[in-house]
Length: 131
Image (cartoon, rainbow, N blue to C red):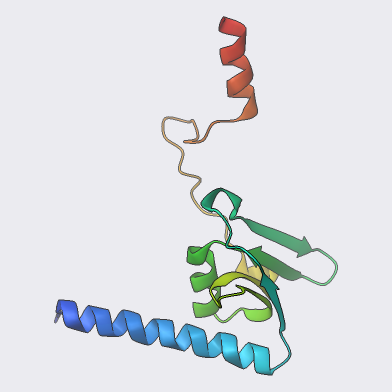
C-alpha cells in the first residue's frame, strides 16, 4: 500500500479548492431558482442551529442550518439547495437543503458510561432541589 503525505501548501490548496467548489454550487443553486434572503446582522454562535424536517408521505427531508459544518457536509454530499441567507455585507449565514430520507443517518450519540455528554433540563431541576 502506497501512502502519501501532503505538504502544508498542498493541504491549503485542497481546502481552497473545496471551498471554491462549495461557493460555485451555491451560485449555481441561486441561478436555478434558490431563494436568497438578506439579514441585517450576523447570527451569534448561540443562535446557530440545524432543523431537520422529515415528511413521511413523500420521503423528503428539509434541512435548515446555520451551522457551517453541516452546511459544508450537505453541499459536499450533493443535497439540493433551496434557500440561501446572507448578511447585508455578503457573509453566508444559513442554507436550506432538500434531499431524500435515506440521506439522514443516525450514528453514535457520543454516550460515555451510558450517559450523554449533554445536560438536560431535568439535570438542572435536580440541582435546584439540593439547595
